[in-house]
Structures are given as structure tokens and as C-alpha cells.
Image 1 (tube, rainbow, N blue to C red):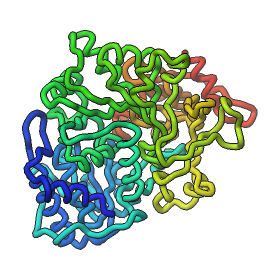
Image 2: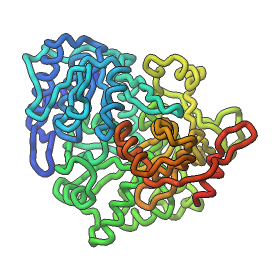
Image 3: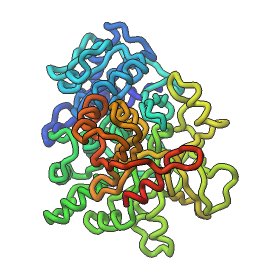
Image 4: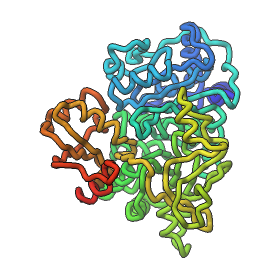
Length: 489
């Protein structure tokens, strides 16, 4: 059940249907989309790529991203999408850990990787192609399709093994629980293709919808609203911070979101006041989901009908939740916690990963008799609505991106004058949270900024520094981040 078959079905039966757009311009119909992916698959096979070999994608959001992705799958390979915002060194670690045979990269990302032991295919001058391989390579539901790298509390990225069957289950749940995709829809890719936005291409390919890549390569609120108005029936996946920025822009400019049909939001906390403002501005276009790389986009859903149902006596409580379990997912709070009480969220179902890539210890710590320990703290009410209360890890979510304090701390401690450091998140009106470093030592802000530029992606670097004489600790010597957050506030 190779996912590439979904493209081949549409490309063969409806080749003239519009598929890939760069802004308002049509780049390829479904026949051309399939043909180009077939050429990439043939080229990969000529390079010796065999089923289950890893091929990385370190590209900005451009139409060729999907051509490469489906070419990898058609050849039987495993895609390793890498966030284009990552530092070259971070991307190089993923290439090494995944044992990728080669990496497709857009121009700036290719330059960031040099020097690199993995073969780099710079896509700025077009994609390589060769004779078609003669059909999609057969794959089973348990075969890997995607390696998603997500950092852990140690700051060391882990590769989540995502299978063809997991992604098919996710797409099925989307169609039944989240939104109904039709051939008249248009998916706007304003968020990184390496994450949720990229995963959501699947149900749109399956239903022969259009795929729209903003000319800016990312999120610009005016551009998104213009594209929605032009293409109509527009879908977009967005972090809550993106929703609030879009709402603020629309309110200031008098835009009503004409053409927007669905915005699926996830990736961080959505405050009730923010979703109320967004709904007042754009109407009932919102759906919330909750997922993790380990169960991609598929744990819970808060449908638009629930978000819109102001008559329900617990409407505001439900707006503060992340909804109910998606189809095929079992959800519980660990250790028999009573209804309404907090505990770690546990998940089981067809969309749950089989484990981490080359990391048996992390797999054993996360999977328990088929149940995924999410690391998130939440509570279930009597109607099955899940409310996220906290993160058991000290992860910071800024602009929908996960930032792990330990990773930043390790870099800052490379400076010889930094004796101690603790990185925490501080509330930010636009980004949800911003990174703040509490430092004991004599290093200057400029020196620490330079250190971060050399080692980690810019979005992970601290936006502010606080110098302290000492860090608050408990009796065991552990830094009390709760005290630091209160002190900062």
C-alpha cells in the first residue's frame, strides 16, 4: 500500500486536473505531477536507491517538494524531511543518524550543508530525472515512509518511524473526523512541509485537490489571504500563533478571510480569547487537532461544529480542550487517574509509531504494551474531551516550533565564562513563547548570540538574557525552572 499510488491513481485517471501552484500560477496538472515524480523515482533507482533506503529533503516550501517526496516513495525509499529553518550542523546530524544516501536541497540549504559527507542534490536548477521505473514500488502498511526527527529532553534529535499504514490511518481519520476534502479544495502550504503541513498533503493528493505554495516561501498574512481569495475553498494548517497573527492582520486591514474554508490549528496552546477573536473575524472555519510526531496529527480533534456550538452549556470549556479521540485511537490517562484528574496522556491505535529509529532505549521508555506515553499532562472529562494542562518536559513552543531548553543550554555552556545556564520560555504575544536564557557568568550577549549562530537554528536562539548570581535549586541540586519563570514574570 505505497502512498505514491494515490498520486498515480489521480495522474492516470484525471491527468488534466490542476495540481501544483506557485502562488496564483499553475505549475503542473496531476499528469505532469505524476510524470515528474516518476522521473525522480527513475533517477533514484539509477543511483542505487533501493526499497527502505533513506533519502532526505532539506528544501523550502516549493512545488518541487511534493515531486521529490512522491518520487522517493515511488522508488520504495523512505523520506527524511528536514526543517529548512535548521542550522546546517543540525541537518547534518539528521543526515548521519538516518544514514541517508543523498539529500535534495534548495539553494541556500545546500550551501548550509557544505561540507557534508552525504551527497547533495541542489534543486535550484531543476530536478534530476531518468526513465520511469515502470510503476510504483510495492510497499506494505508496516514499511517506513517518513522519518520525522523530533528532539527529546536531552536535546538529541530522535527519528520517529512513520509507516505507510500510519499515514493512511491519519488520512482516513482526517476525512471522517476533521474535514471532508474535495477536488475543488486548495491546500495552502504556509507552514514547514517537514511537519504537519507536509503530512496534510496526503489527503489532498488522494482527493485530487490543488496544492498552493506561497511565492514568499512561508507565512505572510496578506499573501495567504490573497491566495485564499484567488483559489477559493482554501485549507491551511497553522500553529495557533499563526492564527493570531492572521487574525490581527485581517482586523487591522478590514479583511474577512474570503475564500478560506478550513484552518486546522495545532502545535501549541490556543487560548480561548484568541480562538474567539479568530472566529469573530473569519467565521466557522476552524478545527483543532492534537498529535505528535509519534502519532502524527491523529490523537484528538475539536470539530468546527463544536467550536461553533455556543448553545452548549460547556462550550467555553470545550474551546479550551483539544477535543475527543480521532477514529481508531484509544485515549486514556495513565495509572487509572479518575475522570477530570490530571496525568500523563497515553495513546494507542493504528497511527502510533512502531518506535524510534536506531534508538531502542527511547522506544522502550515511550511505548508500553502498545501504548504511547506522550509526555504531556492532561485530563479527560466525562464526555471524552481532553484538556492539555502542561508538558511533562520543559519544551518551549515558539511560533509552532518545538524548542528544547537542554539543546540551547548545551551550546551556551560552550562559552568558557558561562558557569551555569537555564533556558526557559516566556509568554510572547505573537509567537506564543520566546526563549530566555538565565545565565551565571561573565559572557556578553553578543558573544552568546554568536555562539548560537554557529551551532543552532536562529529560531532556537535566546531572544533575551538574564544574568543572575546563582540559579535557584532544590535540595538535590536540580534547577527550579518554575522558580525562574516566576522570577522572570
